[in-house]
Image (cartoon, rainbow, N blue to C red):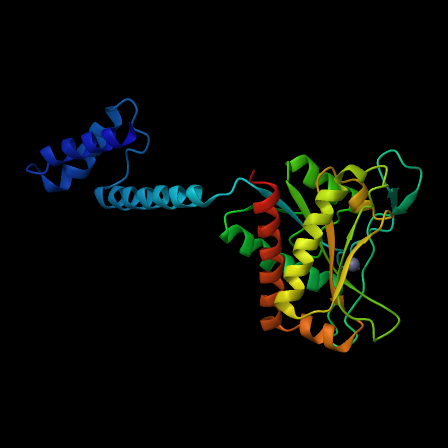
Length: 284
Ligand SMILES: [Zn+2]
């Protein structure tokens, strides 16, 4: 409708072109204003042309994106946050549970790189977000900066309420032993009273992501392990994994994970694993 009106306005403007040039714009504008549904009468021809061009480009881009959209929403949770954010209050470890845990802890840090875990987690998560979006996934982030105050239960509920299909929680490990190295995945066990029913899907997702991640990076594969004490898992209503990407207390793992070229392999591996899981489990 708007396009027809713009065309009509241009025709009317053109019919005045033979008249007084100084008056042309004003007259055309007056006439355009009289058109009942004209939204933006003061625009000149050049502006209108540029906008039409732009809006048709936008339409083409939107169409291309829609064709590639997978209709799958992935929640990415970069673990922890800056120590400047006070997350020391307690919250229930699971829905209806009397067990209370700190809302979110500070995480570990790179013994050799000097990087904080919360920074590394966010860095990788943002790269993963971009990679997944390029592949046609929809992504929700529980935090996109280091200063957001969001508890572990809130992170899980955010993914639940957004209608996410799966939740990927990004962490790095620490150990008293500098020898400890490698990547692992944590999931709720089959006996977990809150997320036990998600065990098989979470295991399958975890195995797919971990295998692909270790293959891509060369990181030692420590396997999918169960843990029923994690608030951010216990509150989940969708398949959920924690990927512990490597040990920041191990020299090789730490320096590898801080390296931007290595990070590309990390992100590629995680994305490939998510892709493999989604193709086998969600698209049928
Ligand atoms: Zn962590």
